[in-house]
Image (cartoon, rainbow over all chains, first blue to last red; front, side, top):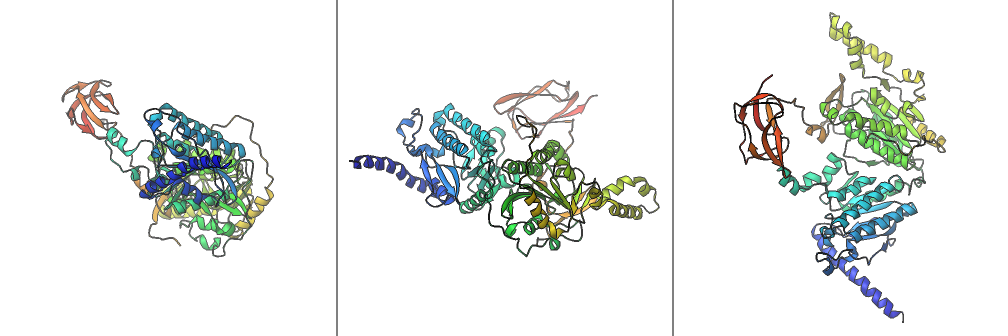
Length: 512
Length: 108
């Protein structure tokens, strides 16, 4: 009796499932996994529940009525990652090039609405040639509805985009609106106008890889947050990220069992004696955080500032640190942009911020000024001032000028400010300062070089320390470098119930 | 820990730092002041028409040539009062961005 219903159901289902064989063949040729394989490798085994398997294309125009487009080219559903509930979708390039038609878009917006309503992260896997031209403006409408939800969901639920194929034209604005973008070498391609158009219109020749490949997006353009060599590596990164962030903006990230840092990382062994010698600030981070496990975000873009997640006493924190190893750790257009967006993510999702400061200032240059370093640099001031999560700052070796203010100083509302004994807190470095303050003495001296040396030394003794700032109360305590973890743990502990409310407003107007 | 060989000396406000540079830092273009004696293509395209000849005196704002790009025929106007010293392109020629099209002798 029931049998006939089942038979009909199985027949319908097998039509769709059969199409996965074609997907496998087509994707394999390009060295790619199928959308189903991708989902299954990201989520917990057996946890994926598919939605809208029988949705068909919305249009019958221009020959679409004669085509069978299984699932209209996108698999959607719910699942869990390491026990965290998520909504997920994956575009299927083997179905009409993964092109986005109206039904395809509505499947995506439906699962997004679900994620927003339930307060769980949404993960999108993009592998699409773009708009489905046969569906005309309906396809564009579909994109628009996705962007609208990306924006409405921003700061409400975490949004993750994984680019595993082409993602071009308007389509790439959905990932751009999400919080984290993952790319894979030789597979991901992102651009607004492709090499063909650039060639015909502008006469400039460039390959797809050089224009918008994974490396370019991760290192030069800064559109991607995570770069992987293979899809498998990418999926491991996605899983790791999901464990660090909360389900939504009303929750805190799930705690892990606390672990001490590895003994091989000791701050006093990492910091060189000579203040002009660099060190890798990531080693300092590893000496502070649980299990020395630092999950770096945007590793290749603007590496002069380091951002990422770690845990302390088992709880997620966000870290922003100047990197003396690259460009001496200056702030510039790219690093300000990078840090500011990360600070806002952490603030939106209740993740306390730890700022490690070793900054010589802003990068000088015509290119920087003309690229708008004023407004980009202002983003970091805005982001820190706006953030109401616990803010802990450790000034390590130096904090000069605008960089001192920008890196979560007391003046921008830091809750705790510590400095190491060797921290130089001043308007600029001793050499520059002495050259300005003692300009005449140096010029009129019978031995200018000797006078300069003396004056620099004089300045260092007077100002190149944390005690002027400490005597003004701008620093709460001068601490030994190896005590940093202890102080940060304590600060996090006592600020657990911090509640700070910004003035009531519709929204601020950050210097985007 | 890190390889020391990539480290370079980097001067900021008279202080010297040893540090690495980034690909993007290496790629940045040096600033070139605008040279008013040269008219450059603001966009790559094809020269459609040239209105002037060498030796002509032109006024600021006077159309000099038509540069077709992005499917648009763009009139290119003289940025200066000048005498045309030389014209370096011909109608039908494909030009690259920033290619010099016309040289001027400036008139105050």
